[in-house]
Image (cartoon, rainbow, N blue to C red; front, side, top):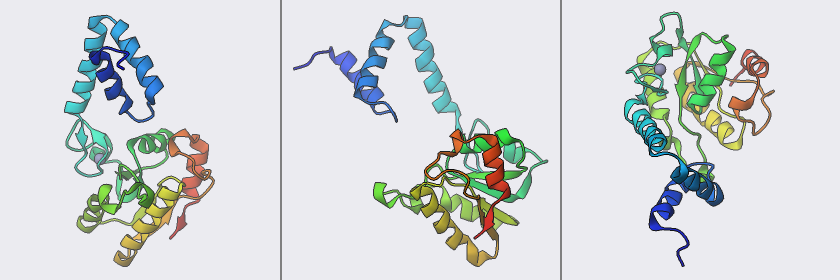
Length: 199
Ligand code: ZN
């Protein structure tokens, strides 16, 4: 039996596809949205479309940006010979907040997870390898999370890069196991960066 009109059911279904939104949250949001003014709903919908249509992947580091090359890759004060590899733009933002890293980044948009069926081809790894082939790079710092997926990804990348002779390092533990980089304070992040070990 259908409790809600098909319009609301459809909205609930769409919302429940978002990450972290379960059935209950989707219902709560849907009822909140239908009680908002039409103008507010239009602004919400417009901002989603606007963000989606105007954001692209940086041609160099793959982070999300509204230009061909992101502000970090375009900044001549950054050192393009040191690349820090992170899982997502949120981790990049966490390291940027420390203000102490003057290299550039590479955003994988995920991590290798055999359990979830996410392989090396599903993340932006080919783009990293192409970058290393076409540019002079001294060091690749792997700053994936210390979860099982993050460690698997770090090992995989290190094996891939090692034969090229480029130095590969891994941020130190000190970042708690299973910890998401974005929730870790800046001091801990800096310590992890400074205490990185060569792989
Ligand atoms: Zn970039």
